[in-house]
Length: 115
Length: 440
Image 1 (cartoon, helix red, strand yellow):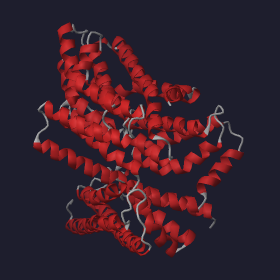
Image 2 (cartoon, chains in turn red, yellow; image 1 turned 60 degrees about the vertical axis):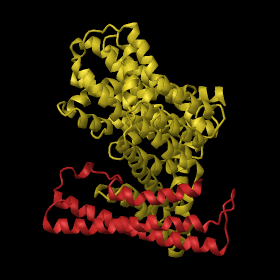
Image 3 (cartoon, chains in turn purple, yellow; image 1 turned 120 degrees about the horizontal axis):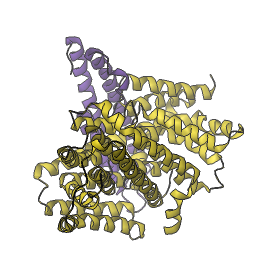
Image 4 (tube, chains in turn green, orange; image 1 turned 135 degrees about the vertical axis):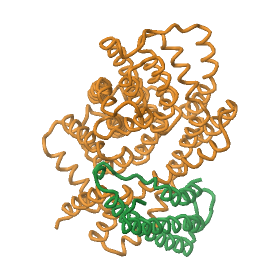
């Protein structure tokens, strides 16, 4: 159950970022110009992409380690590297989505329009 | 720099990132990761991350969150809110201001099967607000009553925020759920009294009481029984120890789905929308979990939480004053942060402080439950407290012709009852703990 949960959650992440549904605090920037907001959002999505890339890499490493050590889940004896690996596509796609959004934001900021 | 100073700078860095619109989860993760490298090095961070993310999201208890969210989404799209509101109005409509009271009651009822406060507020308001305006309720009272009523969703099980707190502090979810009912009842009671007083002081804000025929009440009751049945089946089963919260949530999701289908209001596109919102919101919540985990890991390395606990423990401040201070801090923080991130971020720091203090001789588990309910009460307040009350924003989106300042004015009497309730809950922990001790 929890293995499935981890995989599902990882698969949800790109969709959440795609819909820009990760909450931000916009209280301080309500009066900022669209352009500077777009610049800030470029920073936000870039950091997101970097963090997701880092996580993807480390989960992959964790999965390899779990395979070497032949770790299995407690109740059903499923090898743990399987859910680790199944998490990877979701995490990787999330990182790519973040990167694409960053490029969009940077373009929009240099054209002076909101993304 | 001492580790303590590093801990504090991490916190500051995080706030800066949040101000410049970096997603909250990332604003917590980045300083967390940097702090981890400073405090213990690059390779420990790499080793930590190997297992941490997987470990964070693969907890059995956590699967309860998406399930209860899906159940709430089905309830929203299945038109269950209309049935609830009609029933509440049939029950309370004969009082002056009765429809505003019915809105509050319907919010409480909907909040008892839905995990999302936002969904509770929006769905009840969509049904109740046009009706209230049609009967000449003032915009101020109508929007304020519904925005306030919706805040009960934070407290009432299966509230996502409540589940997050329970998981974070490793408390039993079932006991945590039970603890919420009496305080929520006190809240609803306070709101009803506030409405009753308000319409007497400002008689023009609400129409005279309606006559409700007995047949109308009967019809509304018949319409509402499936929802009551779902509630009893799910929570009766959980509290009776027949199944775990996760199993209960699964059963509830299926039952709500069937009820929504039977009402004939759940369309194909509505069903897809349910799955989408659930996926999207789950992704958001779990992302915050991952970010909060990272910064808390490095705050723990900096020993900020334990040092803070020692400092406060040694300073001879009365525990209740510390508690009041923490509550004020939360109200302020709630002005700029959303409730979920606030809890995930602060509880690991504040919780050891609370456990280290003596409150009325309560045991550790009781103290954890009591404190959880107090934080959630403050979160409720934060949802309608100016300048950024999430629920006021939601109402503003629905009721475009009522300025937000009107809603904030209307919310004042409700806020007064909220603060009285918070005082009562702090002074008498037994309000929170009574039901837990009775039933477990």
